[in-house]
Every structure is written in C-alpha cells, then in structure tokens.
Length: 303
Image (cartoon, rainbow, N blue to C red):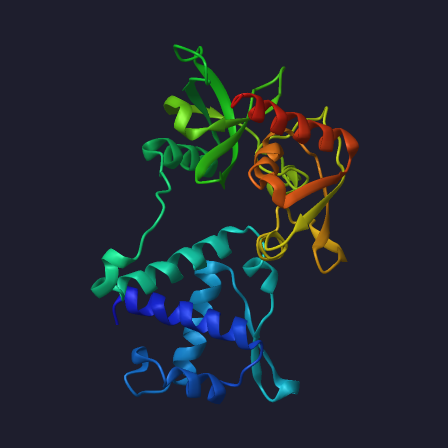
C-alpha cells in the first residue's frame, strides 16, 4: 500500500476515535466500510494493531483498549489533540491536506492563506536544535537600514504565531538573556560547531503560557482581564478564545463577560482594537484607558 494511503487511514482512525470517544473494532469497521478508502473490506485486527503502533510512533497519539468496557478503543492522551502541540498541528495539517488532495475538481473554489516557510532559516534552526549546536545569525530589526552585528546564539525552540515563525534564542554566558527572533527578519543563519547545553527543566509551552502571543515582558505582570462582548461577538469569542485561560463568567441577553488571566502586553492591544465597538474592557482600568486612548487617536486621524 502507498504511504499516502496509509497516512489517510491513520488520520481517519485518530479522527473517528477522537470524535466518537470509545469504539469497539466492530463499531470502527461499521464506520470504515462507509468510506471509499475501505473498498468494501474491513480492517483486520492485525492491521488495526499495526496502525495503532504507527500512529503512536508518528504522532505520539496513544490508542488504548479498555477490556472492562467491552474491548472499546479510546485515545489515552487526548490532551495532545487539544493543546498547541506539534502532534495536533501535524494531524490537522495532514488531515486538511488529505481533504484538499481529494478536492481537485473544485480546487479553484478553495481559497487558502499563505503561511511562509521562511526557507532554509527554519530548517537550519531546527537542525541546530537537534544537534545541540549554536547558530550564527545576522538579524535586521524593523526600522534598521542594515542588519545588526553577527550574533552567536543558542536555539531553544520555534513557534508559529499569526502566520509567522519565531525562534526563542539565548545569548551565551555571561549575558544569558533570552529573546525572540522573527524568521522573516533573519538575513543569514548558519550552524556553528560549538555545543551548548539545553536545560532539561526548561518548558517551552510554559514560557509563553501567560502571554497573548510572542511578547514576554517581565515589566507587565500577569493579571485578570475582563472583556464584555456584545451581539455576535459573543459567539466569536466562545468559538475562538483569545487565550487558553479564557472563561465565560457572566451571560446576559445583550452581552457576555469573559475573564482571562495573562500579561496584557502591547501585542494584546491589536485583537482588542480590531473588535471596535463589539467589546468593552471592564478590567483592569489601565487597559481600558489604553484601548480608549488608542481608539481616540485613530479617530483624530480622520478629523
């Protein structure tokens, strides 16, 4: 069987078990036989077990069997499919790719957004992470006419945010400062032969857990933010939360209040401003004043 066809079967299995929660192999086969992939043939138990092993190896998704519940299969680590993990990203990307590849007859009616790959820079950065070696980077900040002096850095991790790739890097000692690079502003990036020690207790997901995006400012403390949304904006915020901490704390016929706990840095202002009169900041007062002043400054431009 072609590798691509196997991928489609793996994706289907993960998706169907994730959506149905718990299924026996017979129940899986009932659903499987309704698909074109089956070609009218059920999945043999030996094939199913090989698929489970392959899914674990490729995506880190654990499909377990509960013998006490009628030998029903379930995903034992569903959290990897809910959080911003590489497993979730890979499965989502491959699943969409599978759908698109089967939709060539209507390809001109499927419009996508471009997500830049940033060429060799991203590949080299990840290669340096795997090899545990430092990188040498020439970087151009916004507003600078030329690139900064060549920097030697320790590559910690990469993150995709708002269709742009970023890398968290660290200056070697004695500075030891951590900061974020935007890949689209890297002029050149090369691997060195110098090894560095990546701290075993460092948590990439936790580094930005209290942030809206890729800005982490120690001078902006983590605090409670309460947003009142009006009309249809309530549904948008329910479906696409602004932050993982977001919870709906009050409902009314005309509005709902959402509470978030994060560091409200300047990059958090943009999604708030973009919603215009559809939201109002209730807490903290300094953030409400900041958003109000920015709206007023924009209004002044049209006088």
